Length: 227
Image 1 (cartoon, rainbow, N blue to C red):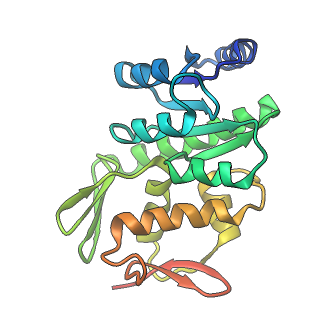
Image 2: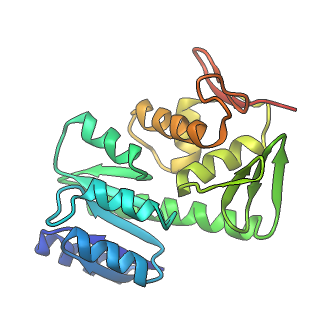
């Protein structure tokens, strides 16, 4: 597995690189946004650890650019404690975030969880698809089509729609979805999930304000509407 670590703090990058290589990962590094975008385009990257504050191109813009050509999982790092920075990272397509300073063991757990989930989906349903009305989820390409129009999904968006579309009618609480999709004891930040749901609705729903696929069960959570 190849990880791209992007941060302008060279000592921090050196430490992360050492730790992940000790666990058997192949690690690429970048110290500014331009270099990060180039490596993401030129290399076969399985996951990106991306700092928010970067020279040349900031992390949010890097995330947005990468999302134009890749669905690679992105974990965003930020030294800021403002909730808006975290939400903006998710809005721009990050799958997860971690606030500095962080415990390297927690970062490793998050990386393993994302890679494990992605790998399970690819092996379990490598060449199949599920169709519900005008929505089709393709497990080989890890994307969806809505009435024949291709919709590119991030890693987390794909995992969410996979869970919903294969369990129609089942109501999931927000806490359960965080546990299932993120795969570890995630901090109780329900907004993280809500942002992903809203982004997913904007991609697959004919009218996101009046969803026909992912329905809110008020006071409980979400479910996928049965045919």
